[in-house]
Length: 370
Image (cartoon, helix red, strand yellow):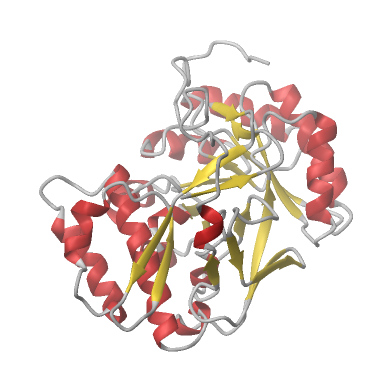
């Protein structure tokens, strides 16, 4: 386990971590050949999942992914179990590329090491001035698109989106702007809210306006607004995407970094079959960027911070509006185990006020709240 010091409060409409320091779980998988694979993400179910891969050849990673899912098929693979599968899968892909002595993006068949990205600061707790200063850092690295966390008050979100728009005009006359509501609205509220925002600000997409599994609700929203609808980062398995895709309820198919490389590749293939672009969440070393470089329908990767977690060195550069992947074998993540042993900072993802706890009145608000 390590920590990430964001240098600012982070969160969304559901809450925020005021101290700006969060846990970053690290999984190290050792082979009898002396290599170590790195997985980034929660893995609390490791004792239950690891027997599915122990003694296996990591080069068979896609088969091992299915073996892990089969290992828990009676009780299901959602939640923490899927997170553990994703962390192990990531470590196995890291090993596979290291065994080939090449960066993972090469192993996966990518032609170009550059991965387009967009700025995303988890910024709901920032003042307007702090929001501008944050996005100026992104603009100075070539970003021309950015996402704002909102969902409580349209006037506030309009003002903040315009502020980000002005900063990003440094690189584009018409920056791409996104608004993330993190499942905080009901259907009609979502349509009314987005319509009001769009009357003053052009939105590229609205993200998670209603609950992640609500195919009919998401379909109603995307049919009623101009912006594309992005969702999917919290879905765990292809079976959870099918109702959304069958209903035409999603325009930008998202995936979560913590679910692993194989999950991203399969979701991308499913989206491609529906002629839809895919966009992964990116944070904590942006490991899924290697896979994003290799799929034909990758649109953009979320870049949540410009720094890396404590004790980790990552062979990548954030520049030119995206992620430039390096040439070190595997994911290019080096872990300083001795440094991690010195951590004394209290991190904050697990606090009750944080964004991972859904508020009691989420989706049930009658009026905007500031």
